[in-house]
Amino acid sequence: MVEVKLHDIGEGIHEGDILTYFVKVGDRVTVDQPLVEVHTEKMVAELTSPASGIVKELMIEPGTTIEIGTTVLTIEAEGSSALQTNETEVKAEKLTPKNAETKMEAPQRGKNKGRGLAAPYTRKIARDHGVDINLIEGTGPAGRVTEKDVIRFARNREENAAGVEITSTPATTTASQTTEVETVEPDVIPFKGIRKQIAKKMSQSLYTIPHVTHFEEIDMTNLLDYRKELKAIDVNISVVAFFIKALAVSLKDFPIFNAKLDEENEVIRLEKVVHMGLATDSEQGLIVPVLRDAHKKSLRQIHADMKELTKKTQEGKLSGKEMSGSTFTISNVGPMGSIGATPIINYPETGLIAFHKTKKMPVVNENDEIVIRSIMNISMSFDHRVADGGTAVAFTNRFKKLIEAPNLLFLELN
Image (cartoon, helix red, strand yellow):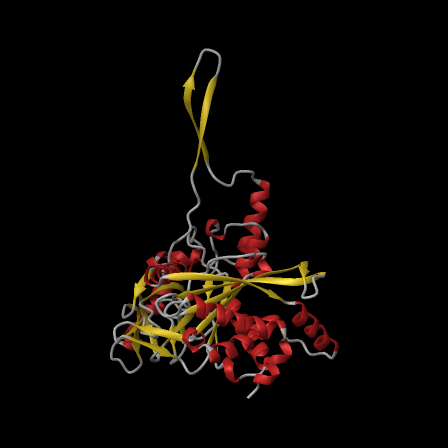
């Protein structure tokens, strides 16, 4: 008997949620065939079959959180003396009506209300319709919510005004009137998977690192004008690509912010490479894909890599390597309308910069003239155990200079 377990996939992951089985008891499987979909704190992964044979037992209910090393299902491998007998028994079971009522097949008939298992695209449709996906009974495999389920639920909601049950109980009664009190049950969102792991990491960072946040204004006018010139010759480089390149240069000049504190050995480790973490909002929560070797790459390559990582993040296709090893992290919240924040550092890094909204405003120039410029706010949080405020100001001043005079970046090319 072969046991398929949730194996250690590294990156400090200790548990995962069972999402969907791709097989059922009695199915014949081959080596490397996908068996089950698992949701860890950093990714959605598939466990594949280590051997050819017949699925003997599904051990874990979909929606259950399990630890590394837990057996998920068992397979009667080919060559086993019991295999031929088991095949006959399984075929007989498939002809028996009672087989439809087995424990592990029940979730596949849509009894998934409250868990909200769904693909990213289905979740997008739910958001577009203003639907809480956790309230929908899925009809897909293992109760997964499908696009049709969302649309059906939205139509039913329009036809039936009741979305939650409201019960009325008398509160006070007088000779002239009766007052009723309405009680409404709250919606429930599972606190597990990526959401739970984000909470753990944020708590670890906030309670471990003494955060200090430094604010600065940056004049984006010259950079925005330069981008227009590039677009005129069919060269499209995002603003964030310029940010990453300027930060890679600044981190080379101020390596203390590209460092990690090793308290156990009482040393500060200055990283020699710049692996830029890109804090990204996704349907699964806050994900930080990593753009590796930013210090070696051109603006064009940074733009291309960042675009690919963002796409993979939204599709839930990032690998473990693409979400680990960052040395500094950025958060671009400006497009959402943010004007300031005190961001939490991506532990165990030393610093994080958030870019906020750029807006046109009157500015007094060096000739005491009032001019209209495009100004962006930035927030830089840093670990005060590792760096001091004066160094942080010098670091952001270096970054500010490179962004306000983007042609200076070409002087830094290797």
